[in-house]
Image 1: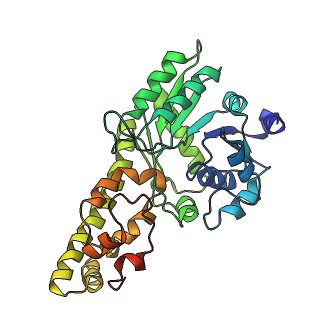
Image 2: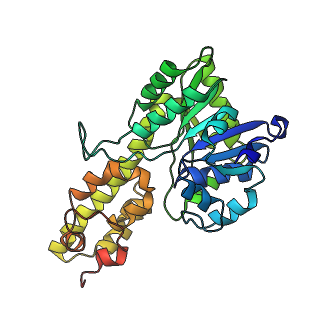
Image 3: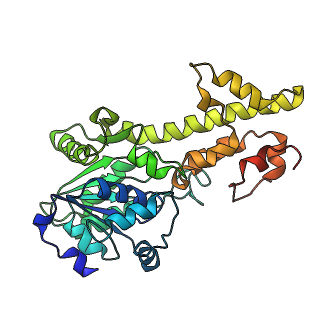
Length: 328
C-alpha cells in the first residue's frame, strides 16, 4: 500500500481519493481513471478482502466492461488500498461513496437512510487532513446531509484547514453502469454558491469535462443536487407504480398490459420508457438508491406479482418473466 502513495506529486495534476470500494465507488473511479490519465485515483476501504478482490481479476462486483477498464488503469493511475489515512492526506478531492442502508431503529426506521457512515468518513477526513480538501457526496443521501457533513468537518478540522462539500449523485443502473458512466445523460454537481464553492464545483467539472460534453454537466446549488437524486428515484417508482395499476385493471378486463404499454409508449409525450413494468425497477437503480422507493413499490402490485413476492421478501431480484407469467 505504501508504495503506491510515494509517487512524485508532479506525476499527476490532481489526486482523488474515494472512500468506499463498492457498487458505485469502484466503477465510477475506474471510468474517471480511464479517461483522465493525468489524475491519480485511489479507492480505499477498511475491508482488506474487498481491496484484495479489486486488486485481482476476480472483482467483488460484476458489471459488463468493468474488469477490462480496471485492468487497463490499475497500477498506472488507479490504485486500491487500505491505507486510508495516507490517501486522505495526499488527496485534493475526496469522494464519500459508502453504504447508506435503511434505518432499522429510531425516527424513520424502515424508511429513512442511515447516514452514519457518511458522518464517520467526514470525521476521519477532518482528523487526517492538513490541507484544504474538496469533499464530494457520492452516496445516496437525504437532503441536507451535506449540512451534517460540513458540521462534522468544521467541528473536527485542524487549524487553518477548510473544506468545500459538493454533491455529485450517481444515476447508474445495474448491468449498464459502465455505459452510464462513459456516456451519461447528465452529470450533476451541486455546491455552495460562494466564490470558494463555485471554484470547487469547477474543479470537479474539469474532471468530468475530459470526456463528457460541458452542456451535459449540470451545476446547481448543494440542496438541489441532493434532492434531484431522490426525485429521480421517486419518479422512476411512480412510473412503475402507474403501469402496475394498469396491469391490475387489465387482469379484470382481459386486456393485455404489454399491448397497452406499446400503445401508450408510442405517444411522444409519454415515451416508451414510461411503460416499463415493476420487474424492471430493480435494474433501473443501483442497490444504494433502491430503498428510498421500496415502500411505494410495495403499495400496489398486481395479484400475480404478489404471488411470486410474498410480503416481507428481502430479495426482490426475481426475473421479469417470473413476475409476469400468469401460469407461474
